[in-house]
Length: 326
Length: 296
Image (cartoon, rainbow over all chains, first blue to last red):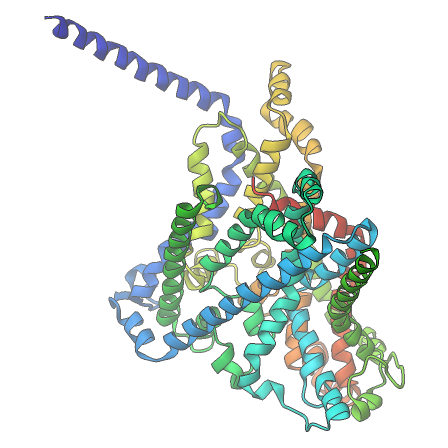
């Protein structure tokens, strides 16, 4: 009897709560309608620039015929992918992209941390600023300019490296732009040159954010500089290291198109060691006009990156929830 | 102990001086090459300490400046328009996201965050702009695709707004009867000049340095921007004059062209504005990067 009486009552109050929530929602919509309108340009832009192209992944499963349009073109199932993976191209570009990024992540992290830790030892603010500014200079220029800089060192006839090699070691000129074997080293050095300064400033920023009291206490306890570094500084900046590394690991199948296209000056002879997924996608689309395979490679890259980022994030969440990206 | 410290400090400085030199030498090299005499390069190659100085490369470039001037013009228009619009829509998107009570706040945040996780790839992206919007060979194609709004910048700005604009300021302005638009432009923006300067600078750099959009969307030489003109000239030195002069003139000019040095002179002309401006903006740039590092 009692239960029967309370049930409709509960229902009623639940109903009221829902209605109240709804009216609250409408009220807040009204209150915030201008703010919502403000986001509109950005929402529309992202829709065009990012969301419509996501729809376009169906291109990877079609044989594009311009006359019929994207929708009208024939489905070919997984043919584009079969073609891509049956040649050894897929393997080579994946290997290149992966190994380059792997080398970049390790080398840049070590160098940048070293620079950040040592620059922290400089007490003179003016000179420290000066160093930071010069280290950042390579980061603000475009890859086109980097290509010029590399060319001025490496071109066969008048490049500085060949001239110095000849002068000091009597080595015959090396034609750098036709020997694919040198390029893994060259690109790793160029990438470090361009990015270590930038990374080190990010790490340096989080080092100066550390509370000075930790170090004072440690000094009183007689901890050496090395001990302070390994027991205080590194653990406290571990979150930012994790975040940065996580970001680069999840992009391990993406590559800086400029670095791999501009810096080797799109030289055919260097393609075996400079071709990455991104340059392949571009060349397949522009030079050979193979839209299907190009789209398939692009889709493969995006999907693999998406999975990677989820896995990396999951792994970090398990270790320390707060360091995860989401 | 004292002596050991001095030794350590000088080791650190030595290391940093080497690092500084490594950062600067490539720039010095192309500059020195650009002012070297062409014959001396044929004999000795590129050198940081040229035997004979000559400004022939620059006088060659400035003799017919039209090609470069046009490329500069395109770059400047794209940079000014792009930076302004980009800054505006970034702020307009970031500010509402920083407000606690905003309906759909989580949805909008996810909407922007997801673009950092997944993309359709280059081919459909390219076709969207070329086939749907017909942007091939337009100035807009150097402004809009990819560069206009970066999810990362929005998130950076959002956390600045959330952390440095006190909720109470906005509340009291609302009580005084100010509209949201007024609050945004009269209170929020003036209080956020540091982040505005930072994001504006990031945008300016990415527009000034862009060659990718130009390479993809532009076939007409009149619309090339300075970076792309530099790309073309690096792989094909004749490019500089072939496009701007009639063929009879071109042959003549080609013969007289100081080939090696003119290339480097063009590179200097291309990066000079950036290098000159750098001392003035490096302060903001560094603080911008640093604020990006602090996770919000």
